[in-house]
Amino acid sequence: MDGGLLTATCLKRQGVQALFTLCGGHISPILLGCKQLGIKVVDTRHEVNAVFAADAVARLTGIPGVAAVTAGPGVANTITAIKNAQMAQSPLILLGGAAATVLRGRGSLQDIDQVALMKPHVKEVFAITKVAQIPSALKAAFEIAQSGVPGPVFVELPIDILYPEALIREWYIKDAQPGKQLSFQQKALNWYLGRHLNGLFGGLDSAVQIAESLPLIIPNVDAPSKRQIHSAAKVLAAAERPVMVIGSQTLVNPRRVAEVADAVERLGIPVYLSGMARGLLGKDHPLQMRHKRKEALKEADVVLLSGVPADFRLDYGNHISRKATYISVNRSDEDLTKNRTPNLALLADPASFFIALANAMVNTGKYDAWIQKLRQRDNARNADIAVQAEESLCTPQGDFLNPLHLFREMDSVFEKKTVLVADGGDFVATASYSVSPQKPLSWYDPGVFGTLGVGAGFALGVKAVQPDAEVWIIYGDGSAGYSLMEFDTFKRHKMGIIAVIGNDAGWTQIARDQVVILGDDVGTVLDYTDYHLVAKGLGGAGTQIRSNDHIANALGEAKQSAADGVPYCINALIGKSEFRKGSLSM
Image (cartoon, rainbow, N blue to C red; front, top):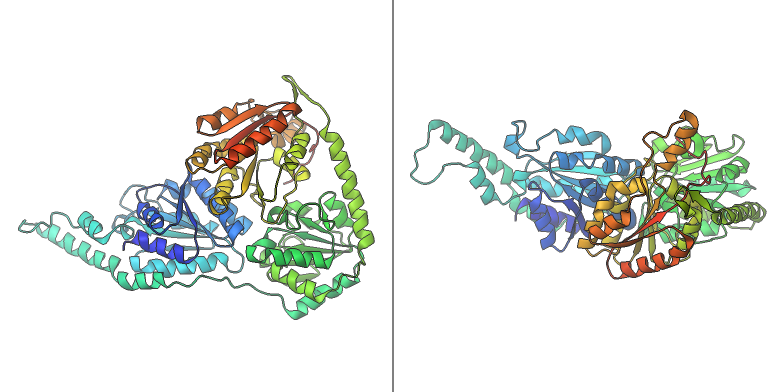
């Protein structure tokens, strides 16, 4: 067994279903090992998308996603996705190839200090120097990625511990044919290299035994104490206008999602869902509010943030009334008190908190009047959006689609198996007002980092481990440029992914404020590019739509194409509206 197969064996033992990669000589044995053991190998067109895919797998399955990339520029290309996973608290493992152990610092191909590069952006770095270290390092990597505040872990694997020992000895021990006279210097070098190789491959048999018996890692979480649950229940029982905001961290363990949804429903407290928590209660649940969150937080007498820090999305805590009792539950000590000190701070797993809290409280209907007030406000905003969705949007090229209308039409064809991936600025933010995930774990956005370019990678990850899902990417035309090339990957792996590109020929979210404040649109102007033809050129299918009459047919074609395993791109020419004027938040 070589180091590549040994690595794959460890991954298999941890329940890894798919490995995402962009090939490179430094890591080839890992890819072959995974294929041999039945782990799906999904090769992308850019390393960053391999890591985004691993991130999505972690969010969907609760098992850390895994990406393997080659040394140097391969590792460097992943930084954005790794940082996004760190800030989104998503557990994943990045396997990075590296220069041979004896060639470090000597100018070998793609040899850089990868440990220093990655260390600020991950929970832990493992720089493996011997084959026998692989099982223990990967076991620790999976434990660390999932424990406490989840996040990415980097494991560096030099090329000479991955390939077969016999081949490496051939590479290292030069001119050692029987009977050949060697110089003293060559003999000394061969002796040194032989000694180095003995250390490199020593203990391989025992390492194989360890790898083949690795237990599945079950992460430890901090459960809230009975005292904490009693304190929270007491505050909420005395409240008249409580509001909850549930964020991504609450759903970090997919195996408990149904329990969390049941607990939230039993509590009977109005709730706003953000990030990965969208869809937790299904579609149109009476407790779930969408609009006017800022106003609700100002009016509430108790505000509970679950897995959400008081960051820019809540105006650094200023959206919460100073008169309200503020409760925060979070796995992160830093996020728990960020920008605003809670009246009741619970350093604990939010999922465990909700389940215990629901068991400790009885829903008496006390909040019904408050819920009705928020519901009427929500309905009024929905009615206003419905009116705005029918407005005509003129451009120099004629009337183009109103994005609100497009999203309402899209929402009508979504099913229980639909998964939505959000990748963009203005267009995606408009979608958040207009489309409704129909089940938990069916909305994927980058999280607090606000990263453009997650679309194709996230979609790949979802489709790789949930092939029956109908995956839609909601792209802005700017963000589509980051990963549209992955249509080639979709086609090669027979993934019928649908991309809807809101094409208004500009970086509109930036232009909205830049033009008003600075009086110039420099750097924000794009063209009405034929993105659907790009998709066709990469083996997919697609169409351009520019009026309401085109929408139904395009959506039907997209769904059929996806069912047939052919990716489809809808290039939707949209007009510029004032729907999100003045909404940029930093």
